[in-house]
Length: 122
Image 1 (cartoon, rainbow, N blue to C red):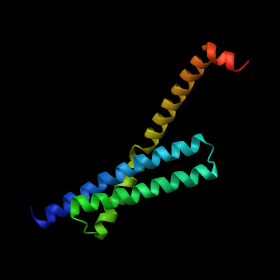
Image 2: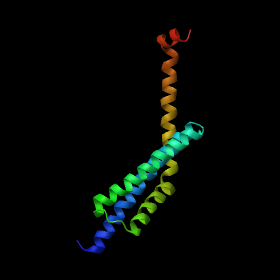
Image 3: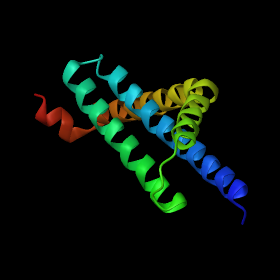
Image 4: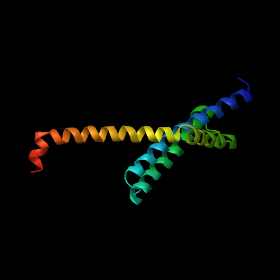
């Protein structure tokens, strides 16, 4: 494999890693919005997401490029993140909120009809 082709493969892998990070970040945003943007939850979610971002980036660089860090790798990671945010970010957030609402409604339905729940709340 030539050096130029290998560089392109590394770049594409980092774009994919950036997209994965964008999906994780979107899940964090949905979690924060569900808690009303609570300061403690925001700090915890941001710490988890940015720790995951660092681990994801360095793991991808280590596995794909033998740990050699170059500027184009940061650019590829940022492009992948931006692609996710601009293309499927809003759709993913709406889907996650939709699933959350369905689970909440089903839980409430069974909670209202449960004899145990009625016994406990008397």
